[in-house]
Every structure is written in C-alpha cells, then in structure tokens.
Length: 162
Image (tube, rainbow, N blue to C red; front, side):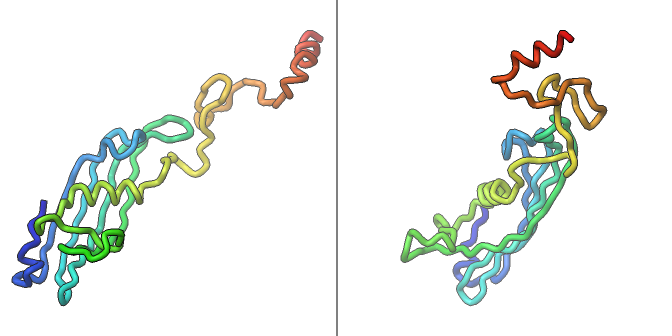
C-alpha cells in the first residue's frame, strides 16, 4: 500500500513507485511469470494522477495446441485518484481509503483487463486434431477430415466396405 497523504496534502508533488508480483492466477493459461509496473503518482494542482507502464513476462499455454511458450506485452495506463467523491457512481476516479492506495490490486486488475482473452503460440497455429488429438503444427495426422452429415453416416459405413 502506498501512503499518499503527503501527495494529497500538497507537501509532496510526485511519488515514484515500482511494483512486481507473480503472474500466476491472472488467467488459467498463465503457467508462470511476473507482472511489473513502474510509474509515478503526481499532484497536478489538486488532481492526483497515476501514470504507469505495466509489463507481463510469462510462460503461457496456447489455446489451440496446448503447448507452453513464453510471451510478453506491456501497456501504459493513466488513472485519476481522489480521497473524496461527490458522486459514488463515478468510475473515472479511484477512491482512496485513508489516503492509502493499493497498488497491488490496481496493477493486477489492470493487467487482467488488458490481457488477451487467450494466448496463441503463433497466429497460424493449427491446433489439435479433433479426432486423434495430434498437434497439427508438428505434422499432419491421418484422420479422415471429411465432414459427414450424421443422418447419412449409415451410407458412409456402406461405402467403407467396398
């Protein structure tokens, strides 16, 4: 937790911060890794503003083929903070409790919102064969890939015998 009372009171105009935590738990696809953030919180004539760069470096599981791979991405974020709100439905500001700011919760929730919904080892990942489960990126399988209407499956069995 960061104590921002000096910033709110005006005795301090800028507070730099760095934060790092495990990436596990952000998504079921994240195997290991870290989330780091570096930035500053400034008092701009009574307006408290957080600016940070948040970075993910992680080992994740591909959503198509199930293989683990390393990935990383980063994004910049700006957030306004306040110690009092007139309208509690205002989501433009984060309300500070007793002048304290929970940077851990803010960074984790920001990462979850910005993180891709699924990770792919490559844009042209072929995935797994739906019949035998073979990784099609390594080599093609010998499964019959023809789509047969289930209503005509009896006829398909007839032609297999010939």
